[in-house]
Every structure is written in structure tokens, then in C-alpha cells.
Length: 167
Image 1 (spheres, rainbow, N blue to C red):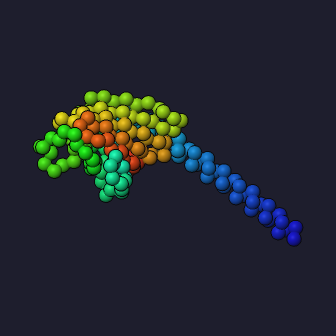
Image 2: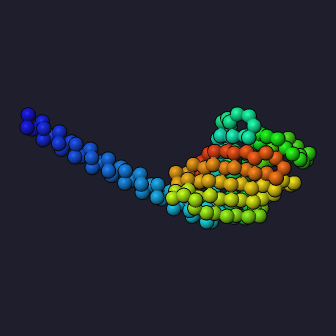
Image 3: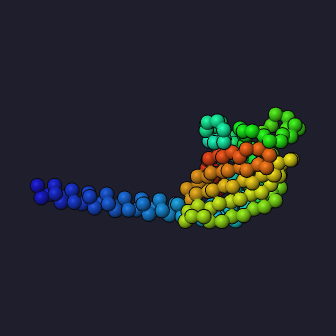
């Protein structure tokens, strides 16, 4: 009986040691991702993939894979769908989404809003629409995007950051 009790105590100690090590490893991984996130935002080189859309009217829904926003230096490549009301429409879109474009940035601001969250505000123009992209990116890579076009209803997306090793 004493041997069984001693063996049980040893097993409990080993389990406790491995659990704390795993927690430390997870914390280190999160810190590495947060540092990589900060570097990507400061270098203006990152890609966000989106899988969920929340229009102002109608129901929120999942969208097919492949929709993304890429910032590379002083330009933005936006490939997003649009669901909403246009107050003034440009007829030369040829059935393309007004959020599907590649254009230079007119403004880029990064601020840390919470302990593990950055807010990136991008200003750009696509033909007639002046747009503000407000992106909240969390340390775990999750992202929330609010798009504020000048001539359309705002729309929101959620997704995640594509990490460096995935590119």
C-alpha cells in the first residue's frame, strides 16, 4: 500500500511539472507571435484573411475562403465582398465589389489600444469612394475589420492574420 501511495505522489508531481512547462511554452509562443505582429505592423507588411462578414443590414454570414486584405508598404490590396446600400454608385465597377481593388495608402496609423491588441487605421480611395479601414488585431492573430466607405453603408469582417511562416 505504501508503494502504491508513493507511486501516486510521484505521478502527481510529474503531471504538475509537465503542465507548468506547457503553460510556459504557450506563453512564449504567444509572446513570439505578439512581437512578430508588432514588427509586421511597423514594417507595413501583413495579410489578413477573412471568413465572416457582418453587414449593417441583413444577417451576418460566413464567406468562402480567399477574401483578404494585404498591406505592403504604401499600398493596400483589398479583396472583399460588399453587402449593403450605396448612396452614390460608380457604374464602371463591371460587377466587381467596391472593396476589390489595389491602390496606394493615403494614411496609416498604428496604436496599441489594449495590452495585447493593436488598432490599425488605413485611409485610401478607390475611384469615387474614400475609405477608412479600421482593423483591430489581437496577439493570437484574430482580426476585426470595420470598413467605412464615404458613399456606402459601413461593413464589418472578422478573420485572422496570416503569419510569416504561412506566406
